[in-house]
Image (cartoon, rainbow, N blue to C red; front, side, top):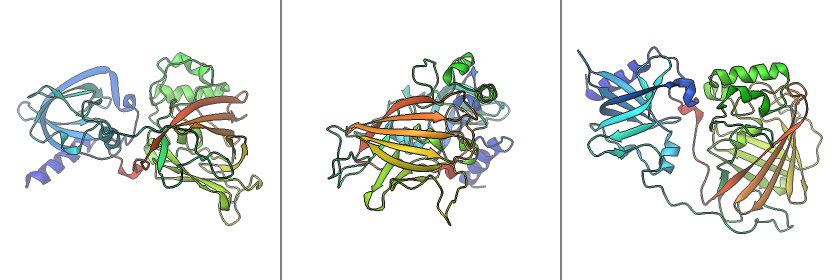
Length: 370
């Protein structure tokens, strides 16, 4: 058997008995109470979304064993200055991380170090981060004086780097990780004014480390405010002549959403989606001074509308307010009104940063690996 075929067969063997976890929170796949250190020789780099894997041959008796080291995805690693060739097959590395919950030969790559040189690799910003321009200046505007939601003429860019990556009611102070997992499950009732049944669902999703997230498992779109919590960002494409605005997402399946500004009633399109509930709902918008106000209704219940797993029902209505403070800052405020899941309307606010001169990162959910 050729070496490349043998390695490929070995790679598949590692996951043969393991259900595909696809994209996931760190705690969903790895037990953070079980630190693990593994040392071995690199045999292969799998440079693919959503996570890069390093295949490792670990000495053992009577035969060596193969391990998979999971590190960040290629988009994050590239931003941090790493490439697929930053680590070469044949190098010996020491990996410190956490053991897989299912007992398979997989480990999270919290720390990956080349033993020959002591150089860390595929973590943090120890590579050579590429230089990126910083957006500055006043809010760009259309000839009629309205703020531009997208780039000035002849330029490009996208919105990303949200200051909040999960829904929490304004004024509430609870600690969460970037995935929306609470540091303390006892804080669940503080996050939002949840009805008892919804609080039970939220607690269950938190206790199971968001393992059943349909966006992670089945590539369901990140509808609702969740589309503005993603690391891969989004773009606005404004079409004043057609009285509509497109929201183009960098993640998921490169989904798009349409917001109408023609004053239409809040109904679906005949011979289109009609009045069927949708992942992104029906959006009708208007301007209030420099703030773009979007009335969103008509959502289905097939997705999580928040990274942290807060539930919603088809009664969900949202009022989104986009205010471009300056060239580089967008203030996003969303009011949640869902009498099916919450005891009263509530609000959450965060900011997004403009990334000038770039297109949204290219992420496709179909590229998932286990």
